[in-house]
Image 1 (cartoon, rainbow, N blue to C red):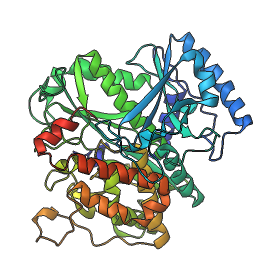
Image 2: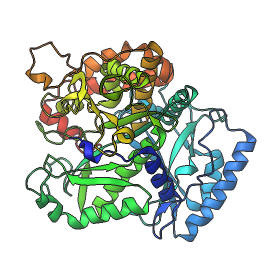
Image 3: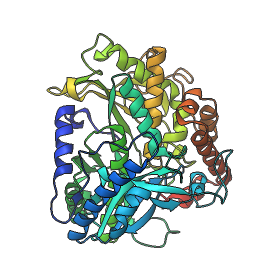
Length: 500
C-alpha cells in the first residue's frame, strides 16, 4: 500500500555505509561473498584478459563457498514476462562459469507467463545460444537454502559481446548514462507478497492468518516465519528498514535500504527468492502476483527514487515547489510524462490492471502531489530530522510482476529524457483525483492493450532499450494480451496467481 514518510530510507551516506558494511560481513551460514573491490561488469566485450581475471576471482570464490558447505550456485536472469529463470552449476564449476558462462537459449526473451513462446523481429525461434555470466560482486550464500549460493547473471553472445536483449545490461547502461551527467539515482522497490497454506495450485488460497489490515494478529500468528525471514535477510547482508502485515489477507511488505539502481534490481530478485524459500520451510506458498483475489488490492512493487549530484539530494533544498531543484523537477516530470508507456514495463501483466484502479492507493491517475497516495507519483519531502537527506518520490503504479531491471532502467531513461527536454511538472494534485470531475485528472491506461499502445509510440523507450529488447518486450506484452483476452477476472487471477 505504501510506506509512510517517517519510514523512508536514512541519508544516502548512512545507507551506503550500512549496505557496504553488510556486504563485506561474512556471518556463518549465509551472507554475501562478492569482491567489493571489483568494478561492475564492463560495457564492452569479454576479452581474454577479462576472462582470466574473472576466472581467478571465481576460483577464490568457489573455494570459499566450498569451505562453507555450498554445493551449487544459482545463476539467475529475469525474462520479459517478469519471471526469474535460472541455471545452476556445481560450486567446482564456478571458476569456469565466471569466465565462460553457461548456456541459455535466447528464446526466453519471448517467453510468456504460461511458458508458451511468441516471437519478435530480432529474437525468437529455436536457433542460437547465449552465455550466462555471473556477476561475482553479488555472489551470496542463501541463508534459507542451505548448500546453495546465488549470483545474478548478465547475458552475452558466444563471441563475448553483450546480448542486446539483456535486461540487466540495459539497466547498467542507464546508470552509466546518468553518471555521464554527474548524476546518480538511489532507489528502492517495496516488496509485497501474499502467503497461503501449501495446496493444489488450481485451488483458491487458504490463508494461514486472519485479522485486521496491519494488525498485530497477523504478526503473532506468523511470528516464527517472520523472525526467520528477518534472520535470512540479515545473514545475506540485506538491510531491512521495516517489515509489516499489509492490507490484504495473508499479505506482508518489506522495505529494504535504498541502493544504486542495478543493485536495487538485484536485491529485489534475491529478496523475493528469500521470501519464497523461507515460506517453503514453514509450509507456506508465496505469491507476488499483481492480483491474488479478484477485487483485492493485489501486490504492488512501488519504486522509491531520489536523484543525487555528489552528496546532495536534488529533491530537497531547491527553489522549486516543495524544495525541488530544477534538475529533480525535470527528472520527475520526464517520468510522469512517460508513465503510460512505462506501465508496459512496470505493470506488465493483464492482471496488473485488476490492481491499478482508483481509490486503492495504486496510483491509477497520471498526476503528482506531496504525500498523495492516489497519485501515480507521490512526492515525499522527508520526515523532520531527515528531510534533506531522505526526500524521495514514490512511483505507485508499478507492481511485482515487473522485471526489476526493465523497471529501473526504463524510469532512468524517462527521467534523463525529462532532464534533456527541461520538462516542468504540471499543477500538483493535493486531493483524491477520483473525486474530481471526470477527465480533469488523466487516468493511466486501464488495460494492457492501452499501455501497449503508449509503449509502442514511445521514442524515449525505444531509443533507450534498443530495437531488439524493445520489440521483444512488445511481443511478450501482445502475446499475453491475446492469451488472456477472453478471461474473466476470476480466470485471469487463477491463471497468474502462482506464476509470480
